[in-house]
Length: 445
Image (cartoon, rainbow, N blue to C red; front, side, top):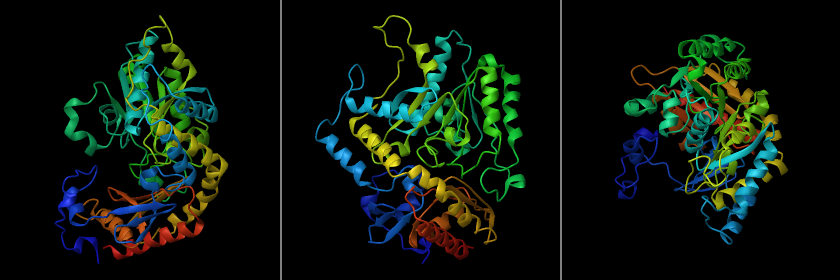
C-alpha cells in the first residue's frame, strides 16, 4: 500500500509539534515514527527495521549510538553538565579544540564553537566582516554565495544561500549587499558524471564578473559548499574549486567552505579541503563532528585571521559574539570521542574504499523509469527524476515514502533522491539500499 493511500490519522499526540522542513498536514495523516536506532538501522514504532541511507540527516557518520561516543557522554554527565562559556571554561572544550586544530593542520590553529550548522555559518560570516574591519577595510561589507547554496536557516545563512523556497518569505529582511555566483548544476553537460564532471571549471570565472560589478574593495567573503548536499549532491567540476581559491586570494576575498555536510569523512577525508587540496580561510562545520549524538558546530579559523582580532587592551572582549551553549561539555565529550572513533576505526579510509562501490550502485540506476541523472562523490550520491507534469517533487516524495515503507531511509529534495550513508555501511548494505531505491522507482509512475 502506498503511503498516500493510508487512512488519515487523528492522533492528537502529533498536533502540538510544528515540524521543521516538513509538510505537517500530510505527515500527521501518514506519520513515519522511529523509536530506536542502532548502527545502520532505525526501528519504527511498529517494530520494522529501516536501513538508514542518509546518516540521520548527513550527521551520524559513525553510525547510530556508537558505544564509545555514548559512553563518553554518559561519563561527562556524571562530572559536569554545563559550564558558561563567557569568561570561564572547561577542559573538554579546550581538549576538543586542540584535537580538531591538530588533526586539521594547514594553519587552522583556532576554533570557535557554535551549536549547529546554521550558527556556524553565521559565525563565519561575522568573523569575515569583523576581520576586514579590524584590518582597516570596513568597506568590505559584501558577502557572496551561490545559487542553490544551502547555508542553514539563520538570516545570514539564507541571505548568502541560494534556495528560493528558503528566502522568498523573508526577502525584506535579508542582509544588504549580498550577491550570488551561478550554481554548477547543468545536466546538458554533466549528466551521469561519475565523480567530478569534466565540464564547468569556467563557471568559477563568474566571480571575476562580480568583482568587476561591485569592486573587490567591497567584498568581504565568498561562502560555498565544496559539494552541495542539500540541493541534491551537486558535485564541483574538475578545476572549479581551485580557480575559486585563486581568484579569492588575488582579490583579498576570504573563502569560507561550508563543510557542515562534507566534513568528517563524507568525502573520504576529514574535510573537502583535504580531498581537493584546496584550502579555504575559514571552515564551518557541524553534524559529523559528534556523529550527530549531541548538537555541536563551529568555525575553524586561520591564525592570521585570529591574530587580527588580538589587538588593543587585553581586558577588552575582542569579538562580541557567542552562544550560551558554545562548547557545551556534553557536545565536546561527544566530539572528542567521535574523532577518536574516526581515527581508530579508519572510517575515513573506509569511506574512500566504499566510494567506487556506491558509485557503481548508484549509476546502475541509469535507464530506470523517469531517471534523468545519477551522480556521486565520496559517500554521497543522488538520483534525479523528470518532474511530473504540474506536480514538481511529488514523484521523488512518493519514492521516498515507498523506500521508508519497505525498509530504507533516503532523502528527497525537489525531484532528487539523495543518499549519504554512515561510513560504517557494508557493501552488502549498499546493494540492499540501491535495490530498494530501484524497486521504489519502478513502483512509482
